Figure 1 (cartoon, rainbow, N blue to C red):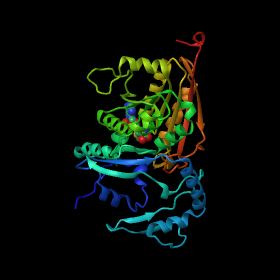
Figure 2: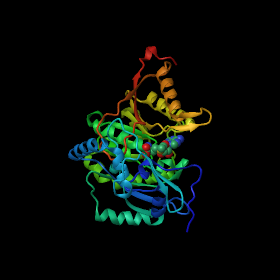
Figure 3: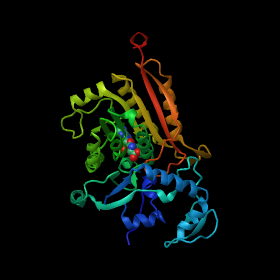
Figure 4: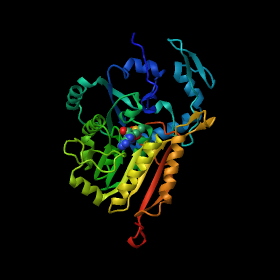
Length: 387
Ligand SMILES: C[S@@+](CC[C@H](N)C(=O)[O-])C[C@H]1O[C@@H](n2cnc3c(N)ncnc32)[C@H](O)[C@@H]1O
């Protein structure tokens, strides 16, 4: 039997881990395929809930959350075994297998039974396109369902090929504010698989969905194609473009597939009024580069710009602190403060954390560590701007 090995820097998004009835992550990855000799690509569907479904979900959650522990114990082996808080045992490989008690969720929107995605298929890259094309013909309109091609468990440099919970939080926020984004021109930074851009394109006029890496951008473009019915029906448009925070200019090189045309550069300059980014602050150097990019873009835009950034505070125990902390989050907050304190630019910036009380349109665990931040820019009048 193949040995399962994960590199020290392999990460797996909770979105893909917390599927319903997944008893044991390794067992599950074993059965569906995992990174290694082949790169497996999955296509998952994510439902946008209808009004009725959202109400039903809310009602059942209110009821279920009142006895979460009993529910969890039931989930594991199908019968009620009492109210123990942690259940343990050995799995087939002899590993200690523990079902943890979920923390109570303050928003009341959390229950593992509701977690999606549903994996539609897995494939290695060579056969994927043919299979998807055939399937597209058979079933080309998923009403209210987004299909996303992604991988599972990637090295850190490929995290964009998975879907992260921050993408859902931001998508929920967009869906809760259709009037705000109606007819807007929007840039998404670090878009990954493109899920949030696709949602945004069902509301806005044009979304520039940006990231780095040709293979990631190709996967993202494929996802736009998979969902183009939904996007077209809404009258929106997504353009997948390369935008590397570590570079100061937008790439217009004619030999780069995801380059910007002169018209597109002019379009964002003249018309962009929103920047969105989901789960993009996990490395201090990249966070610095992200904020430099935001600053550069906003300074060049004709219109004042509003930026929405979602993130998940990932707490870790560190020897240095001898405590749980989230250094990446602390650095993000530091960058926000620096932006707010900036007085010598062409814009002034106001920062605000938004309450995550907007409705949940997509199925995921809206844990309390998910946050949404809003940065508003205001142009500094010419006579007050310092050079
Ligand atoms: C954790 S993923 C989030 C992806 C997606 N927004 C989501 O929430 O599912 C972080 C994203 O930041 C992107 N990223 C990292 N470094 C970048 C850079 N220098 N320029 C642009 N994007 C970058 C990654 O490629 C990846 O797509």
